[in-house]
Every structure is written in structure tokens, then in C-alpha cells.
Length: 208
Image 1 (spheres, one colour):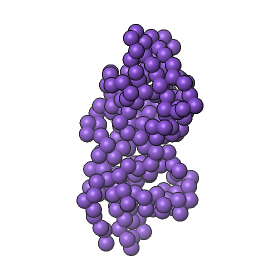
Image 2 (tube, one colour):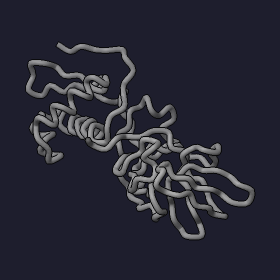
Image 3 (cartoon, one colour):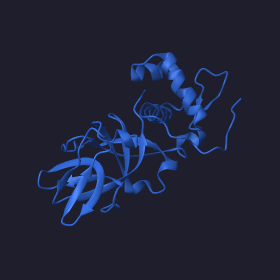
């Protein structure tokens, strides 16, 4: 018997979001949910690991399980009220600046994280310069598309002179911009010309 909860959905890890997205697409194509074995095979992980992710997703109120059925995963309102697809534009450095790698992928993100999905995109993080802000290597950051941020906010910063993009805290100092990592082992650096391309508003954790 399904048990529904009115609690606010929690935040999934990166792998949990991928499982939700896979289950949604599988259900759309086949008319029924994938089995635990099919999920394990798709992601090349063990069935017990799938059970662990499903258990976590249930606790976060991101899916339901209809006990007693082989294909037991049930998504509230066929997942549409829980997830929204946004562009996954590529890789961004959380270390020294590197060029963002553009692609055409999408990723499913909890709707509760995005009041206006059309103004958001996602980037995969490479590097450890933002770990003290809870952004780890391999995480996915959710970015609001905007051209300015307040001092100290986490931003996607484009450096035109080098055609590079980086993820840093932004501070304005007279005629230059200070880009500050959130890692005490790394030093800030300065640029004369920086264009803000978005503000970080959320994080999807990589698989533990």
C-alpha cells in the first residue's frame, strides 16, 4: 500500500537525481516502472546499492514504493510534479580556470529547487577550490542565469581575455575583480575583465 507524505521534498545526490530521471523516462517509454535489477544494470551498480538509493529517495519524499509489486517504484503524479529538466551545459572548473565544455545534455532537478526553471542551467564541477562551500569535485551546481551577483556570492565567471570560465566567489575592488576560492589552501586571484554568467543556487551531490 502506498503511503503519501506532505513533507517538502529533500535534495537528491547526483546519482539519485540520475535514477529519478531514468525511472521517469523508462516509465514514459514503457508504461511501467523499471525494476531494481534494470536500474542496477543501467548504471552498472549493485542491486543493494539501488535499494540504498531508493530508500534515501523515499525518505526525501521524491518517490514512493508500492510494496508487494515487482516493479514497485511509483512517482507522485508520474514524476512531473517532482522533477524538471534543465540544460546540463558542460564542465566548469573549481580550481584554475578552464574552458567550459558545452554539450546538449539535460538533467532532472527537483522542482522545489527551481521556482523558474527556464532561467536555470547546470554545470558539472571539476576541482576542489569550493569545498568549504560544500561544492565537491564531481558535484552538479544549479545556476540561475544572471549577469550580476553581490560581493561574496558564488558565481560562474567568464574571463574574456583568456576565454575561460571558473566557479568562484566574486568581490569588486576598484578597477578589478577578485575571484576567491573556498579552500584555505588556495589563493585568490585578480582579473580586470570578468563577466558574470550566473549565480550558484543549488548543488546536486555526487554519489558517495
